[in-house]
Length: 250
Ligand SMILES: O=P(O)(O)OC[C@H]1O[C@@H](O)[C@H](O)[C@@H](O)[C@@H]1O
Image (cartoon, rainbow, N blue to C red; front, side, top):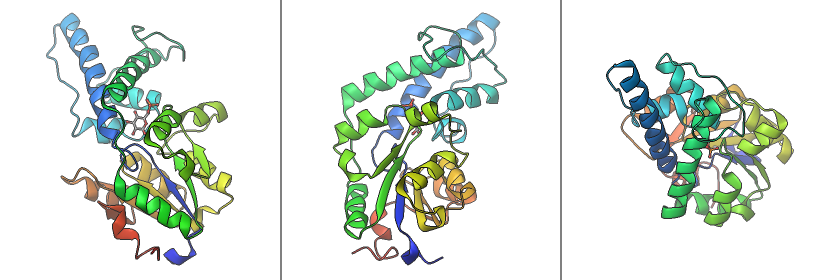
């Protein structure tokens, strides 16, 4: 499969199109640290904080909110009841912790706004000018709002996000289902679509879906590019502009 056979591009959002991965990471840290601190005080055990450099990419990044919550808790040997989707932020459940984290994300987005990566917008416009179809495939249930604030909504022919996944009962990344749904909505075979991802769970999803090209986007450095390759990226770039020639996009 040559890149010139590609007909569509499927983009993750947080950390690929918008500088919101850092917002999520900060919110996860604050929520988990509060939870862990209380728990260790009660048990009389040492408090080991959430590490944004290792815990975030390994257990949380790119996954649906409840999957990330469960996955990090499991790494600490903690199992909480699932709870229900409308659990309040103080409920000691997976859904309650997720609600607590989401309140923090919304507050941070409100305070800081959303920064768009200029290389991503230029690349999106270039592939669309070339006639390629585009979709955003994000685990975030806040995708619609973030795209709107960022002014990116009109650059996509399809959207599969945390809300879609919930409504259609799609397993989250690293399962390939959300990307496969995006390709299906665009009417393009996975082999003729490229996936753009900054998360380990995301490149693994692209690989599991047998997409024509899986592009790892490394905006953080420090060995993340190597990890993206190990989890399934065909190539890794730190700026989407590097790809314009490869994809014959002028
Ligand atoms: O909590 P939300 O907005 O539904 O987002 C879920 C996840 O969405 C992903 O895009 C992010 O990489 C994760 O960090 C985030 O936790």
